[in-house]
Length: 231
Image (tube, rainbow, N blue to C red; front, side, top):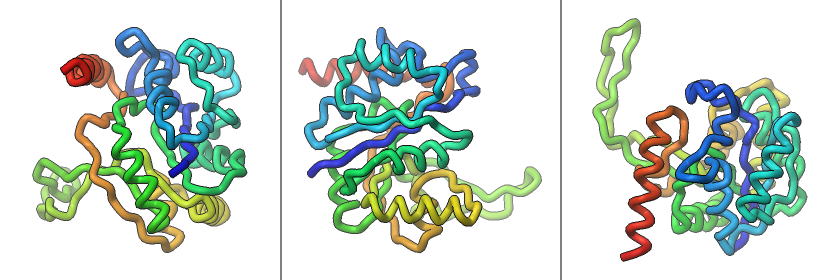
């Protein structure tokens, strides 16, 4: 099954405190962006990548594509002020229909089997997201006071990729834009448009590089995966 992946790569990454786009930071000798792109470059199901970028960062991204041997990037539309705007730009730049995935460019540890299951689930049901079951006890809190304890069995931490039939996500994106609705992720737009969204169980190491501590853990994950490959 084929899919196209869309990545908003125009963020600032202020929580990393790096003074630059965090995607350009090094992770065991390669950039975060390069490592994420390599996952999809190596996946035979991936027929194309669309990156939403800042105009001022195009030269750096072009250099990363060359250094990492990335040949699947089909378009690099200008990103917007919000993630939702950047994903909308990617959707408008895509003309191939089919299944589309939206993935955080700062998540280089997604596993191929999860990607494939998402694509298949979206083809069958329209929309699917990667997620993991909540580990900790979760509570609703107001003004520093616990109101109640949530039912952990029903709680999932949602990740990316998120997979959709292209026409479904395009409709949801345009509806949200037209009605001034701002979602926290693409599945929220699908929910807002009235579509069911299904969950595919992912892995806890599919982390997003957000803080300096994440970079340290990312280095450990790379060593661990290298060890798995060598065994």
